[in-house]
Image 1 (cartoon, rainbow, N blue to C red):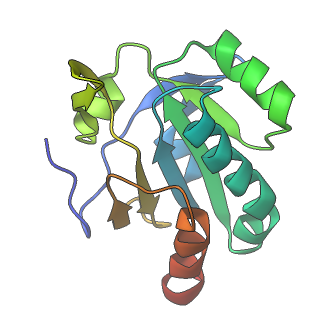
Image 2 (tube, one colour; image 1 turned 180 degrees about the horizontal axis):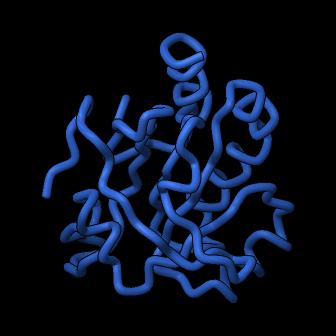
Image 3 (cartoon, rainbow, N blue to C red; image 1 turned 30 degrees about the vertical axis):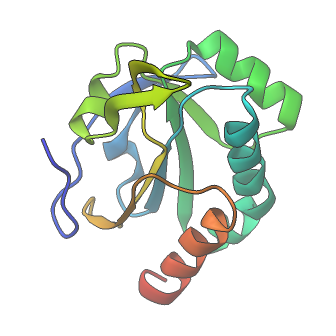
Length: 156
């Protein structure tokens, strides 16, 4: 299924690092920054998470919630949060069903090997639950500022 800008975002419920069940519907009335990343504790993912951490207050001021999603289990998410002081929830998509619904579970190539994994992607979901913006194959440098700018200019 392809996610389209202007269309209702696929709903989901996933387990969060704090043990709670988190549904997209829980955030109706807020803007949601839903970012998919490959793996906790890896260099690019750590940089991206820390960039979101550093801008967290600015997103909050714009009525935006940040949710990170990867196939890692909640225990690993909690270690990642503790190590880097992340102030937002990380969701465990261990069976990658949500990643598949958002079209970010893809064939990847690394050092000559092919495997299935998360394509780093971010979706901005507006207060009504519609996809307002998507970024796929995200380059980490400057991305968080770009997402913040989009919300500031279009959804605040």
